[in-house]
Length: 113
Length: 116
Image (cartoon, rainbow over all chains, first blue to last red; front, side):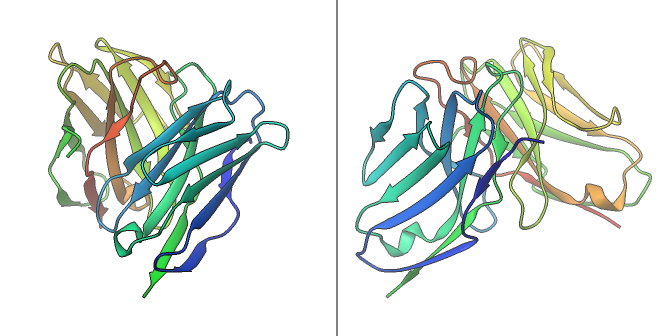
């Protein structure tokens, strides 16, 4: 079935560098995307979202890019900090809400000092 | 803090038993959804409640059922527990339909269920 997936299970970056986490989705009907951060033993924490009528959205130190042509989503984190260490999930919805969110398996971001 | 609270935080059940998990949604949020997250995996959508009615369901068997109350809090019930039901169960709340402008979906910290 169609699903949302992530390219890399683990991403290691130096503290202070920028991080880019990628996500590919296969459902062309997807119209809403969210990035979540999940720390060990905790629930997913909302980072940023984007709707399909946009291709870029910025938050505090984070930017989400959406390329509908190739069905690709990315999360950019500027000036990575130790507190950014976590598993990052992209999630999508295509059913107007009632179908819930479809999550990928996650990318574990490791920050090296 | 997201304002979404879940209880209990951890519990152990025996195969074949029944379990009830509870969730209080963020104030003003009328939509609650439940997810199952196995170790090392992303969350999987179980079902969603809007104004006390189930209005969406993922690929889970009928032994997974739920309720939403007038104050928008919710319960997840699982009957005839199986070993594979061991997971983190997450509750999420939102104030509007997913994808609506300005909507944000907040998750609780989850309930860890171990079936032995």
